[in-house]
Amino acid sequence: MARTHQCTDRTAADSAQAGAGGGHVGLLAAKKHSRRLMVTLSLSASVFLVEVVGAAMTHSLALSVDAAHMVTDIATLGASTLTAVLMQRRPTARRTWGWARLEVITAAVGSMVLFVVGVYALVEAGRRLFGAEAHQVRTPAFLLFFGVVGVLANLSSLLVLFRQRGDNLNMKAAFLEVMNDALGSFAVVVSAVVLLLTGWGAFDAVAGGVIALMMIPRSLSLLVSSVKVLLEQTPDDLDMDEVRRHLEGVPGVVSVHDLHASAVSTGMTQLSAHVTVETGTTMRKACEIMESMQECLRKHFPISVEHTTFQIEPQGYREDAGEHLEM
Image (cartoon, rainbow, N blue to C red; front, side, top):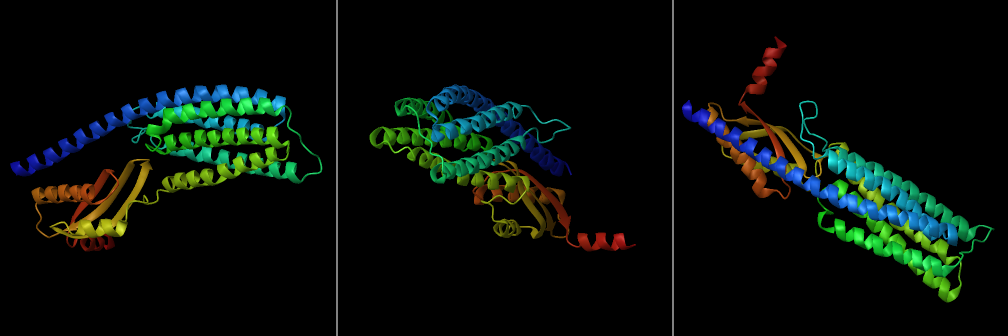
């Protein structure tokens, strides 16, 4: 019995230490994210003010769309920054996962706003290209200047976010926002150059439409990724048939049922299963089986499963439970 307790205590201690270590790493990452997002937010707000002035001066659709995109960019970056700050808070008895899910909600809302702005810009581009009233850009040289300012500022923001862009959906959403802005500012520059060289005023509407077409697919892709997490779908990199096959291959395991996997947030995958073991399995052996299953998950699958819950059941447990319930 003493050995069984030692095994159980060691497993609990290892799990607690791993959880504490994972939480510490998560807090450090959230702090780093919040600092980078604050820098990017400041740059984006400055560019937005410049582009609003530029759009008023030049009457450029491309610059107006880019400025409108900046509004969503600032709102999303602001929400992303707040999310990164809140994610630094430790879980409580009331919020056992902390604020981890907030990054997914932020990404979903940001992607929907991006989609709406993109559709509006596409419609406006069509109206300017094919409408009866012609729209002319004023002072293309100013348009070029404002476009170059936007490109330089957005490239600076991309450099700030680049290394952490894949850490979670929140950072991915922020990076995509800024990348779309950089592409939009580049389209403004191209529009200004074409106007200066050819005088073709309609190209500004074409540039605005191109910016919109770049925004829409990316917003939909991010929205789909966010909804998958919110619906608690199985993570894309986790083949549940393979998981079941590997777990049932662990010595002492008879079968695995009620197998579920989902993501609380990016990088925080949870997995639960009912595991039927051979009759007469001792507590020590059950402890060894759980350790083997956790090691199996770490070794054979590409994503890290942060939280596992295994319910150990002896053979015949379900039948006995069913008979008891019928009585």
